[in-house]
Amino acid sequence: MHNQVMLKLGGSVITDKAGKDVIDRQQLATIASTLKESAFSGYIVHGAGSCGHPEAHQYHLDLGADRSNAVGIGVTHRAVTALNRAVVEALQNEGIDAIGVHLLDSCLADDGRLVSAPVELLDRLNALGITPVLHGDVVLDRRRGACIVSGDQVISALSPQLAVGRVGLATDVPGVLSSEGQVVRSITPSDIEGLSIGTSSSVDVTGGMQGKIRELLVLAGGGVESHIFAVSRLQDFLHQRDHGGTVVRMA
Image (cartoon, rainbow, N blue to C red; front, side, top):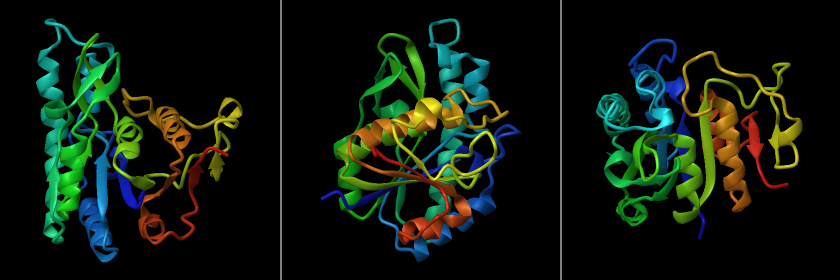
């Protein structure tokens, strides 16, 4: 049965994307408390925010890696794993048994797309009542040497393999916003060509909101709806109430 929840915490929610390596620990504590109160069960993915995007941009890892910039792999991975430790710690402080899982250690990509991931490991952790916490990361790539895999790609690649029935993306905006600043309540493949959305001024090597929508449409093609909402409406999503945000679906 597809009864698991996968929750993505946007990098802009848990870090200050205008700075560098600035973690919002108070926000993490609030999120963890909400998850505990709602008896959350499933998988958590988080973005990199200011802990990874600047480093990946500095070393041009979005373009690949060779001996000239390979040092950036370790630099970027250290930044994102520091954020992952903070997320896991916040969850554990609320009594949620959580373990960080890093893509660099366990995944492989081919031309920017994941081709292997520790699906059985994640499933077994979940079966033991442990919450796996994954994140956007630098990943070794067969063709490019290395690439950046966003948390959104993690969702689209792994959700179909992990019996995930609901996907939620907690963001710093109330949903996908049109160029006029209005929430777009529903997005389907037929809407995407005529859709005009705002863009972020922060450094984001994974495509920002447009990249997010592309990944979620892949997931929608497999029959899984995704919900994009403000982090302040997290409890509404967890309890399957109207969260005032955007739903990405097939039709």
